[in-house]
Length: 293
Image 1 (cartoon, one colour):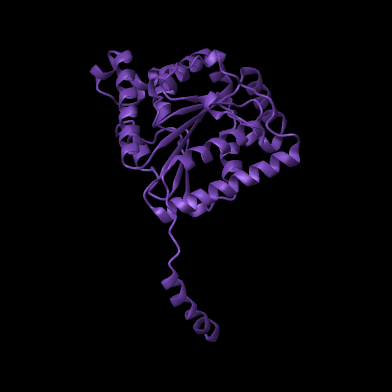
Image 2 (cartoon, helix red, strand yellow):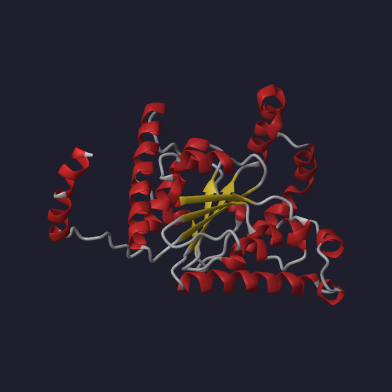
């Protein structure tokens, strides 16, 4: 893959994100489809190797959060980047609209239940960030559906300030306990999103992916851009960074995400078990026993 400085897509609190200036497309990272497939496979092998090391070391876990507008490519990115990774070491959880049980708890409760254990990579397809994104664009969800105390919703600016604070505290707490959080915003242009939504309508086999509500949500495009920009700026930190990934080209997007996941795994002080010569010799004696069975 061409040399690439992934730090240009990283936001860790040092600089503010201006989403309108962030690219939705970059030059191709591959020469042709064959090179793309080769690079993707090589990345998957590296991720699998690092996850295996993480599992044997059993001191760290990693949470990857994927956020995006509809049709940006979250599902496909997760599928392609992690194909080939041992499924026992990866947990994928997709968050839908809160259930009745989830609404009876605080907004972080359902996320805590799905967080990865040590030795594994957890992947959130959407996440607790929906509670400062969708609810920011549609505050009636807070006032009418979430059963919050009346005083809590009297000042929505304060409510969101407290939610950002709660998210920062949770991610800081988890980092200190060996569970860093890496967050991806797949940044698709409005034009590209429109083309993908239309493609879902025109292809009968993809109609199941299309929801009529996606069209209505496009009316709030600018509001969502503002909500994402604020959420990223409020919660980006050196220990729990955001990566704003150009998403107009799906292949570039997948290669970028794969490269970043590898970079972040390489930062973890994971120690693979050292070979034990004495145990190795002892185990050799079991070979004829197994063969004789």
